[in-house]
Length: 287
Ligand SMILES: Nc1ncnc2c1ncn2[C@@H]1O[C@H](COP(=O)(O)OP(=O)(O)OP(=O)(O)O)[C@@H](O)[C@H]1O
Image (cartoon, rainbow, N blue to C red; front, side):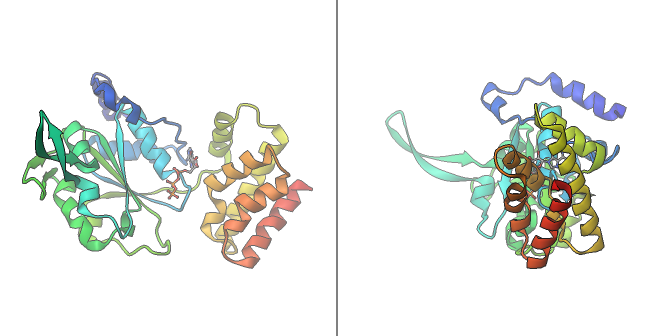
């Protein structure tokens, strides 16, 4: 691992996160599709640059962010973007509280404010699902200024040195809009593909204690075929989703393997011919 990353890990191990946030430190386990991706993302974060992960559904973007938080011993806060996302769900809101028999207005800090102040990791999922007018508030947070003026309190917040941002998008997904240029320009962007081959085999070994060898090999072969058909254009990218494959394996340990693949992989696809192709490929391996 690069020295710059090792130094950062050592530095962060010394930080004792407040106990009440320790349950926000997720589990690791991300498998990098190649020898560089995970480490290259870490370099950006160590250099305090926001990271944008671009990849299809179920390619491990969230898992990668969680694994970075685990490696840096850093709690992670998440924002799930949608057209309903507003400044309050990102920054926080004012509420009336009773303290010492007095009624007071208190500001409850939202994920961005907490992560900036405490030096936590902020994960912004499906950032291109948000309404374009919602996100400019992030511009000063994401560039060299690393600061924010909270419009609800007037407080000027300068980010803690360990504060980091990872955003994720599913490009081309229905309901998404292209990301605003000024926003996109603030991120270092990485493509996150589905893992395959050795990395996928390792993930299965680590995920399942007692997966039968023939089921494991069958699923690895099917995954390979699905990826091949995605490349030829006969299947849409999501057919090769690792999430779906893991779902199929979970089900196949309890029900007929063919039905497991049907429910977890084939039925999720829109096109009838794609559903059929998945089942044909599966049947060549099920025998
Ligand atoms: N490279 C990988 N390493 C480890 N686990 C992975 C990897 N890719 C996918 N997974 C597993 O697949 C499942 C889905 O992954 P995850 O939720 O991270 O995907 P995502 O890209 O964030 O999906 P979405 O865009 O739909 O939110 C999880 O169980 C995750 O552990």
